[in-house]
Length: 510
Picture 1 (cartoon, helix red, strand yellow):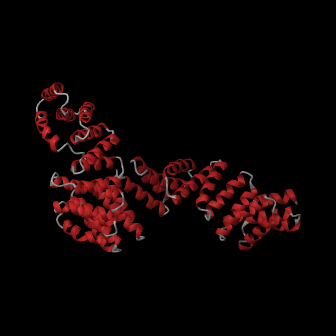
Picture 2 (tube, one colour):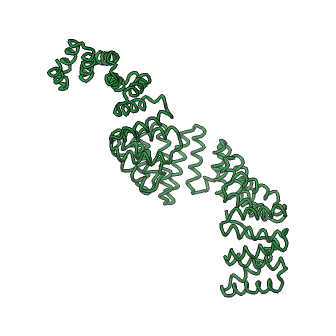
């Protein structure tokens, strides 16, 4: 949104100044000099100071314009054109708070001025205060007659729609776009934006008549893509796929590689949501071929490889997505996941830390911290690993894997009681996990809880009598209870199955 110039009395003054600006800089400066002479000759004239301020503003000399408008307000604080010009100068200088004050004064002193309300709205929008900006745009429309032209009112409706979208009042935004369309009913951009607002409001079906009519005469792929989104909202997936294919044809006809890639990514995502992984992968591959610089295409191709277990193939596209400046958090988390699967711990840690720095979603944050914890563990920093898994468990206390890894870190730190607590919880959460049960046995051994260790390892051996490590550890649990014969039987069984530590234990301890 571009802030508007002065209207009313100020506009009449600017007609002369603007004409002079079509000539040379010297002529423009001459105009300013003439106006300065007028001010010096009549320093009590509000009109003269406003005219000089306008001349400075048109010349881009905003500090001088500000000074001139301030002189005018000092002479007559109720002079609306002086406040209006001062608002323009402050806005141009980048002092939006000061600009807001001045435009608010215009509306307070002259509440029927459309331009005051409009530019107050623009300033509030620049200050990212969408609810207040929307209210100001609405007030500008209420004061539109007789000052505002049809185009002015369209711009106010568009400004209102944009701020309502930021405030997530999509139904209100759609109504504002509809009002703009009353003046420009054939404007394809407004039809498209109204359709998007209706979709966001959950009323996509209301947009279909206008959008399908526009699609029949438009080569803009975005129209077909939006129709596809509406069909998805309605659960009509076949229609959605069909519309995306139409969007792709239009993008190809326009020779727009970026549009083709964007449409193919959308098509792939829809196919993936249907479980059609091969089709999705093919769509993402086409997107990368059409536009190798599309980070979305590279990212989605990498994620598809990752989800299908082709982890090493995923690295290249994901690294390309990162190099192309893709969404830092999404790409970093995907790269962290790939490197974690490949046990490339330093890379996984670097990526995970990047993701953690920008993540807000608790589930994703827990996933990133778990990757960082595993990386720290593999790198031998058990204290840092323990801290990460403590953070994960504060978010997801029922995560069996996090409980297991927290136990492993505690075990390495010599906190056997803590390790046992984590391992016990991991077994409760996932009773079928051999890994969790085996580590629980190891925790009991380390904590000198030999009878409980015996129980755990006996159950593991009963489940799999060729589990050499469980046989070996069962022997230790029995030996530690001074049950040497039973320990001998366990170690012999493990040794006969080829487990060398059991053979060494027989010769050393029996």
